[in-house]
Structure formats: structure tokens, C-alpha cells
Image: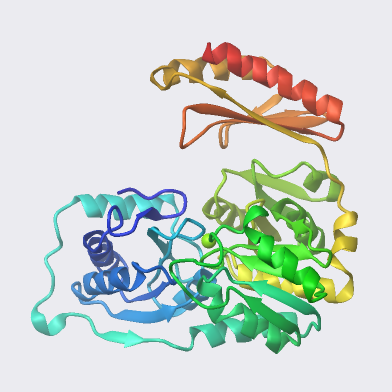
Length: 433
Ligand code: MG
């Protein structure tokens, strides 16, 4: 089992087993020290928490149980410890689980740290301390209130009527209570923590939020808020029941937060550069870990992803969907969300894919690289190939899950977006032939 961009992730008790959690726990206890451990409501969660904690204890470090909490609650709580471990599979379906590791400053483990843990996992077990030197067990039940207090101090009050869809995930423990304390009239749905995710799938996509959209209309709410399974993501629904996804929220938050620098992944819209002509826009690989690392390196004002992760570095380097919900509610207390959204231009985006024979991948990659570099565009290879033209851009990436080359093109004009798309498509087809 290896770390991906979101930590360790796989089928619970099949790939992500107690044995694996125990080994990771012992590596963390040895390399870092006292650790705080949280989980989302997945059925395999308590088992993995116990195994991880046993691993930490076996090295002589303390294991502190934070219980069922959102990922940003745990990441913020890591400040008092050498490491924070969150047992979650984020937006994946119920059978999955995983381990995501956090530094005391709220940054997820970077690639170097993940490699270090992987290498230690491959070595044989550390020699543990004697029986009278093993670690002690504590619990912390105050992390949720600390998280709420930090947000209230920052956001103040906002009186709107809001429907919150927790998706039966970890935010059942925080977002409805937080928004009530902000002064909102809150109706919470899917607000019972349940690792079967009976209300909807944990990923907050437009299709998965049918109940939220209908409820917002039915109770005449000012907006709807939805989280993924562990609460590092947040998306919204306006008062008409229309889904307001990550791309639009990214533009809204960026317009509000950014003075000089914005960090987004390579697949975010060019609308951001148009909205923020004076700001520098840094583009990273897709994944909140990369956005957070770049934010820290550049000292930029804000970072986010079209998938619905939001990082407000003045508050924390962890993507915090709970904090983002409070910030959005404060924006909507001033003006309706549909009004705000109407001010954001929307550019045509064309998406497609080319299939290839998996065994030929290396040769195809070489041919594709040559063809794209000859296209006349400025090429960045931060993640796949990002081609920047004067009036648009394209992104070409190999899918991580199937033998397909995915293509995305965007321009202010439909005809130009199609032109860019066709040119890139023919390069990809040529390379894959
Ligand atoms: Mg998540």
C-alpha cells in the first residue's frame, strides 16, 4: 500500500487493514511522537483507530483519541501534537477507508514525508521500548469546540436561513451547530453520522445533492451547504435550488480573498486570471496537498480546487470545508448567492478523451510530448501538459484509472475553445495511433 495525493486510501479491511494501520502508527510514533487520531463515521474507522493507536503506543509515544471529527477539526487540533492522523476515505464510497497525516501547522504530510513513512514501512519493525515505557492513552473531546470558537472569532455573525447536508459524514458533529452559533436559522439533513452513508454518496456532486436542492426550495432557504464525508470539501446550492459548484465558488472566494496571489491546480478555469488581473495565479498539480504547499511557499492569499477544497492560509493550511461554509454564509448574508454568481463570467469548456493501448504508454507519451511542444503554445508539465495560448488553454493528462488520455480546452469564445480542442485532440490521436 502506497501513499497517493490524498494519503493512504483503499478498501477497508481488505487493503486498508488493521495490520497496515498498526505499522503506520508505529512508524509515526517512532519518527514523530505523540499523535492525535480522529475518524469519520466509516464502519471500519474504530477498528483502524485502535490499531493505529496501538502502533503509536508500542513506540513509547502517547496516542490521543479525538473521536468522530471532521478532517479540518483534526488537522487544526494537530497543533498540540507531533502528528495528526485522520482515518477517512474523504468522498469515496462507504467500503473505502484511509489514513491521512497532518503536521502541527495544519499542513498535510508532503511527498518527502510520505516517502519517509513508506521507506520506514518497508524496513523491519523498530525495537520497541520495555513494558514500562510504552505510551499512554488520552482522549480529547474539546477539538470540535476549539474549531467552532476559532471560526466564530473570525467570521462573527451571519443571519441567513440555510439547509446543511452533512451526507451522514463527519461534519454532523460541527457544521449545523457552528452555523446556529453564527446566528443562522439552520435545517440539517443527512445529519446523523452513519458509515453506511444511507442519505447519499459522500461526494458532493450535483447529482448527489437532489435532496438538498429540493429542500432549499421547499423551505425557502437562502442557501444550501453540502460537505463530503470528512468535511474538507464544501459546495453550495443557491436559493433557487441551483447547484453552485467548485469552479464558481473558487471564483467567488478568490475575488473576496486575493490581493496579490492565488494558488489553484492546473485544471481551474482561466476566469480566475480575468477576474484578478493584478494578482499572480500559481498553478500546481491536482491535489490539495500541492495547493497547500505552494500557498506556503509563495505566501499567497488563498487557494482552492474546483473539486470544492478551500484553503484560507491566514486561518489554517488545511482545506477547511467547515470554515468555508461559514465564510460563504457571511457572503450570502450581504447578497443572495445567485446574484453573486451572476457576476462571474462562464467560459465554454470542452472535454473529451482518446483511448490507447496500455502497453504502448511510454512510446505514446514521448510522441505526445513532442507533438504538444510543437503546437506553438507555452507548455507547462506540472501535471500532464497544460498548453497556454493567448486566448485559451488546454490540459492533456493520462487518466489514473483507465487507458485514456483526457483532454480539456477552455476559451472565452466557444468557437476558439473548439478550435483548441480539435488541435489537441488530433495531436493525441496521432500519438496514440
Ligand atoms: Mg474530503
